[in-house]
Every structure is written in structure tokens, then in C-alpha cells.
Length: 357
Image (tube, rainbow, N blue to C red; front, side, top):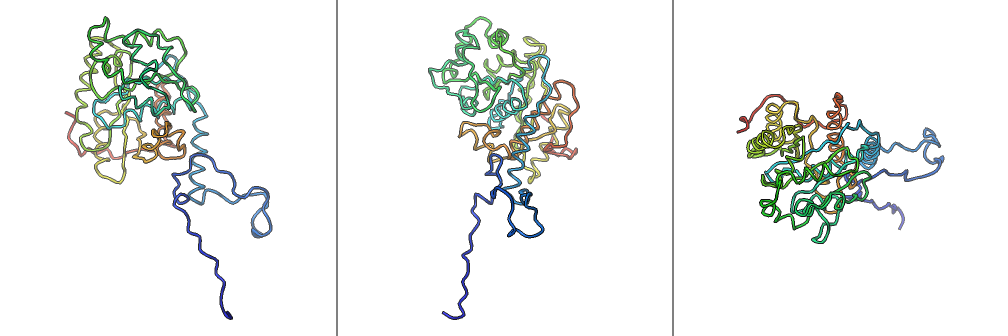
């Protein structure tokens, strides 16, 4: 055995430790208490080692900053802002945008109601709201004139956030609404009769342009259109804009497209930049300077009945939605937006895609 050298086994860093996206909250000092002499003469007994020099430390710091920034609060609108989140093209991040913007606005100090008008009930699921067939829902409000206050539920884990859920019954509402009096304005009347104070109402529309979407457009003053930064993203957008014009001309003169949000932005591809450039050139100041990146965390959160803000507050998706909410809130009170912390999706002004048809 002479001459043998004892070697400590190498400990391989686990995959979960290497991924900074796995941190969902602040991390405490792994070695609590004062420092000992074994840490070296140049290290203070009172000062813990810097945490932001590791992936875990950086992710923890981002989570702390995100939650701290959310708690700062923002100017509240003088009257309730009713925003219709619409795009008849599926898969553009419409429901994801609705629930995460709503959670962000609530974390910023607002009182926010999400109205789920999609029969699939994905917004209700993402907010952790039960929406089986027996639950009082927005269907009862539209068809049976049930007061909105009787179907609204508080969202777990996010103070100030509420949801009027959708059930499968809503799938037949389009046909049932046809024979009802004031079929286009039933949601508007329900909102007007709702007495609880709210800063924002976000309406998640189905991916169609039927009577449910028309009810939303009549009830709201602002339209928010999420646009996916991918090929065919602009297809069908012209029809939505024409419908907005029709509703404004005949049913709701206050309706206008106030906000365009670029979603699923992947800065590694030329196509994403091309789509973003074209949208910015066409819509101008209506496009938020903040864009939402393509993110695994955003996709995972609904399966846990959470928004990305509570699922992983330090992720790029959570930070982007917080910044987008901040931009929307400041626009509503006429305050200039400071893009110091913004995740800008596209900077190039040159358009490389033909105009929207």
C-alpha cells in the first residue's frame, strides 16, 4: 500500500443546480452565522460570500428583485380599464398573456378581474380556479343574467386578483345568445352592475369572432392584441381589426386598439426580428416596447395552476410580464415609460416583411 494516494471522489454538479431557471424564490445563505478563520484572512467574519457569482445566486437575486419591483406599486387608473385580449388566431399566447398580465398588475398593487370567455377554460385553469360544470360561471351571467358578483372567485396566491371562470357550458352560449334580447351587450351590462372596486378587467376571448368576442368588444374600451413572432403570425389580423372597426361604428364608439404585445420572441432567429420590425412599423406606439420571450417556465406554469409570476418569479418570462404590466399601467395615466429594466424584443427599424393584408 506504500505510495498510494487517497483521492476525494469528484462530486458532479447536478443538473438542477446548474439551471438558474429552477429557482422560484429567494435563497438563504447556505452557511448561516459568522465566518470562521478557515475561510481565509481576507474574508470578513460578518460578510457572506457573494451569491451573484453563481447561476443559483443570480437566479435568486433576479427573483428577489422581481418580487421587490412588483411590490413597489404603480399609479392606479382613475376609472376601471376594461381590456379585451383578442386574436382569433390560436396559439399566439392570448390566454397566457391575459393571466400573466393580470397577475403582474395585481402584484403591482392593482385590483384586477379576469373574465374567462373561452369555453376551454384555460385562463381559469392557469389561475387555479375550479371550473367544472356545476360551478357558477360567466355562462350564467350571459345566459341567465346572474350577477357577476355571484360567480367571481379570488385567485389563490395573488392578492387583489379575481376570476370569473368559464365552464364547458359556454361552448353552447354562441347559439343560445342569438335568441336573447341585447345579445351583444349582456357582458357590458353585467360589468356595469358590478359594484366592487376594480382597477383593471381583462377579458380572455375565444379564438373566434363570434358573439362571445362581440360581447367582449362591446364591454371594453381597449383591445390588447398578442402577436406571436413567427411565420403567419399576422394572418387574419386584418379581419380582427375590421371587426373592431364595425363594433366601434355601431355598438361601442369608445373601442380602440390600445396595445400590441409581441409574444414568443426568440432573439436567435431572423424571423422573430422581421415580424417584430413589421409589427412595430405598422402599429407604431401601440406596440409595447417590452416583448415576451419564448420560455419553458411560461409553458410549465399553467400545469401547476399558477401564473409564471408565482411559479418562477425570477425567470425571464416573469420579469418580462412584470415590465409589460408596468408599461401598460404607466400608459394609462399618461406617464412616460422608463425602459431601464425592459426586455426589448426588437430594435431594428427596417421592415423585411410585406405589409399586413
